[in-house]
Image (cartoon, rainbow, N blue to C red; front, side, top):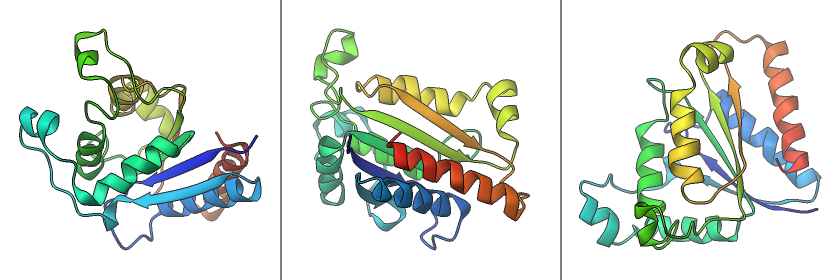
Amino acid sequence: MSRRILIIQGHPDPVGAHFGHALADAYRRGAEAAGHTVEEVRLADLDYPMLASEKEWTDGAVPESLRPVQDRIRAADHLVFFFPLWLGTLPSRVKAFLEQVMRPGFAFAADARDGIGERLLQGRSARVVITMGMPGPVYRWFFGAHGYRNLKRNILHFCGIRPVRRCFVGGVAGKNDRGRTRWLKRIESLGRKGR
């Protein structure tokens, strides 16, 4: 079954020559080869400010640069996030993006904060691909994958996005060509499956 997939490339470096970019390209190749419709948003190419208050978050306007992104999220069946692990979690550019985009009235009903409102992004799934210097199992087992778990439970699940799956691509700086090729093939295969 063909899916509408939105890739969200969260690497803050606009140069785009990192392994996370290659992984996103591999996912896209696999997905398009299988007949899925794929769009991509590169956060490094967008201009948006960080929020400074709750009032700004609840009552302020979404920046012009991110309104089309909200439309793409609304139209997607599956979201795929790519970003590097920075200080144990997602880069501030990704967090600022999520704060701007996942607002009351778009991602969840305003009363969802009281535990009773509707999650407005139900019916969508997600995959989170995180590149990191440490081995993936160390991040998962020793550090408890706390940055990923926060994104999954407190942001994506809160908005109704389920299931959320993950790939921890560890030891990126020291990976040899064989290790990189193995990861590229795995991610391309996930793209073909639309997962």
